Structures are given as structure tokens and as C-alpha cells.
Length: 438
Image (cartoon, helix red, strand yellow):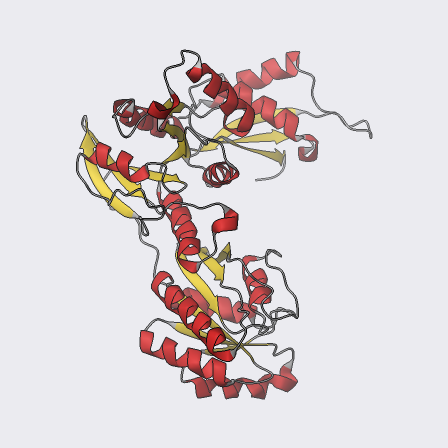
């Protein structure tokens, strides 16, 4: 997906615009300049097109020179990493010297820019939008992020400016694999082993890999597209724009893959960042293979593997269906098993179950399981079920009262479905619909 960055001086409404575009209140909105310290990202969708939106935040500095330098650094990184820049100004006040300095940098970059004159709350102030044309850009749109005024016009303009979505060539039936994880856990070493060449720079310095790198490789007759990605830091350490955009690029790599290898450090596994990334992978419906690297550093205790598996199940309960491999990228231990595991997960992700088998399961559940009820005396009934899609496997249950399908019962149904076929490594999606719904 394309990356759209919101740039501008503090207190012009960047966070309000971010929240409006992504459709949820994710950024802190306050009248105090510089409230947004961390970089925020979200996913927006308009007219069947999806794109990332990045709120680059404001600046706090002791003097104007430091302030201006900080803004210049941020703009430079945004220009390198973004497909489109939304240059936000205060439409009521009009452009000031800081806006003009930013405009000069943006004009020289050649990147597509839309000037967003914010705080144009009603038609009375519409004439003030023309002041923004003095910044030298063709595309100027007056909006009110707070009141949602002209936001749809802005979304239309964004869709016109961002590059078209590209698809993989139909004749290349490669399994796309994203290698993701925190910095310095061995992602590039794993890619190099699988590709049998030094495709990515290997270094002990966290964050060496900045951009996603694709490598096509055939292993035992199967074609794989390996996507190496920048490492992800803990949230508290995402303190500069390069690392922040690396996180967005990692999510883009996950969007493109069939199976994600979540690489973790066996000496420090199951961190909050690992869990967050795993949740992103599952939300996107991708297959997942857990890789615990640096296994050679933990010694030779016989029960070590069993202890780690128990810890894995305790720490990441939501990944109970995901296989885990213990490897050493340094010595090569366990790496030879990864391609077959990926291939199996990709196959499981495209697996189908016949409607007859599914509805036989429903009959057994109706006969032997206790179905949900509520205080109003309503009893839950399942009429039939069908598999609506693959990649990931998606099942639709037609029922009388969809709202009675509580999470515990849905988890139970997922377990029953997994018992019918091998869905190891792939998430399953379940939807409940009323009998008359389509």
C-alpha cells in the first residue's frame, strides 16, 4: 500500500486530520503545540483503495533555528519514504514563514504534494483558501478536519495522486514470505542461508536493513519470494523517523506475503513487540511460522525445548495453532526445515472443507454441545455453514441470532473446524449471519 505522510508545523490540525482519514481517534488532539511526540500510523480506505497514513507529529525546540532544523530533517525523511505528502497549514491564519520554508523544500523534491488548508469550518471562510496558493502548489484543498468538511474531496484527491496498486505476475506462482521481527534477531542471516548468497548486509548493528528486499529462490522445486524487512524496535525506542517508517514498511511487507516468519531472539523471546507484530500478521490473515533464533546460545539442557514451548503457549496463547522452529542462523541448525514448513503453511492457508463435512459438524454440535442463550430466553440456533473463501480460510455460519455468538463459543467452533482439517500455521476467520442476510 502507498504511504501518505502528513507534514506541517505544530497546531495546524495534523492529528485531527489523521484521525479523520483513518476513521478512528488514534492521535492525541490538543491545542498545545508539539503534543504529538511519537509517530502514528493508520490504514485508510476510500473507493476500494487502501493506503497508510502517517502523522509525523509536531516539534518542540528552544529556539527558531533548532525548530526549523528539526522540521527540515523530518520533511527529508518523509519525502524519502512517502508516496504522497499532505502539507497542512492553518487555513484561517494563512501561510507564515515556517510554511514557506517547508514549501520550498517540498517544491524542490518533485514529490506529489497536496496543500491542505485546515480549519476552514464554513463557507464564510472559503475565500481564505486562496492564500494557500501563494506556496506554489497546484493542488490546494480547504477542509475542516474537526467538522469533516471537504474530507471526501481530499480523499478523492489522494486516490488520484498515489501510485496505482500493483499485482504479482500471474505466471509467477511463488510463495511470498516476509521475514519480520525486532532488530538484530537474525532475519538477514536467515534470508542469506535460504537464498544461498549474501543478498542482504549482515551486521550486529540493529537497524542495518532499512528497506524491504525481495529475493526469488527455488528450493527443492518450489519457488519462494523472500522479503527481508527492517527490524522493529520497542515502541519506546521508536524515537526517530527512519525507524518509524521502517515499521510501516514492515507492515507493507506483511501485506504482500503469504506466510510471515516471525523471528524472535531465543534469549529474549515473546516481547511485547513480538506479540504486537504477531497480532498484525493474524489481522491481515497471513500464515505464520515462529522462529526462535540463537538457540545455540542457550546451552544443551535436554528439557530446554519443552520449557520454551510451554512458555510460548503461555505467553502467546492466541498463536496456539502456529508451529515453532528452534534454529541457529550462525551454525545452520534447523534452517533446512524452514522451506518445507513454509510450503505446508501456504497449502493449509488455501485449504477447503466441503459443505457436507461442515454441516455434519453442525449436526454433531447441535446434538451434543450446549449452545449460547441469553437472559431474554433466546436460544442460539445454527442453520448451516459454508466456507466462503481461502487465504485465509473463511467460514460463514447462518444462525438465528448472530449477537449470541460470544467469543468463547466462536473459539470453540474454531477448535472444532481445526479438528476437521490441517490448518496449522494459518488463521481462520468466522462470521455469523442472520438467516436472511446475504
